[in-house]
Length: 147
Image (tube, rainbow, N blue to C red; front, side, top):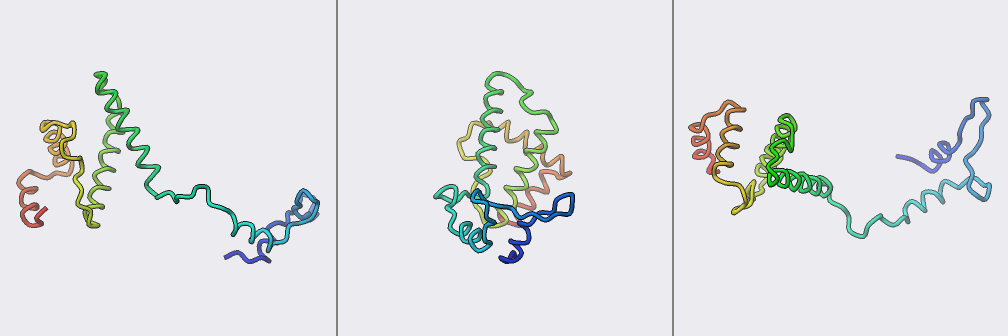
């Protein structure tokens, strides 16, 4: 933790000639450490509403989803390279699983979303194959856990 004395020490700079000079304000005087700390304590936050940790990532994810949907609407299947698609899908799976384990009860995709049953089956089958699980094992796990 920084003390006023430590803050004053940090404002002292050594030059290459081993001369010591003190950082000065526009008035030519070195700021008192207590004044600097008091001003920092009074500083107003950048916004009245504090930002949540996931706000920026959520906005970025929504922009990415819109860009992918736009590319698909244009018939472009190259919106993401395979390794980028795997990274996004894997991260989304890990985040969803962590949220469910922590007590969340939302679906990974809203009901009535524009994905088809075929889309869902292809993605689920691919995920099961990637982690070397069979549908039977998924069924057993669902019956044991009630999920």
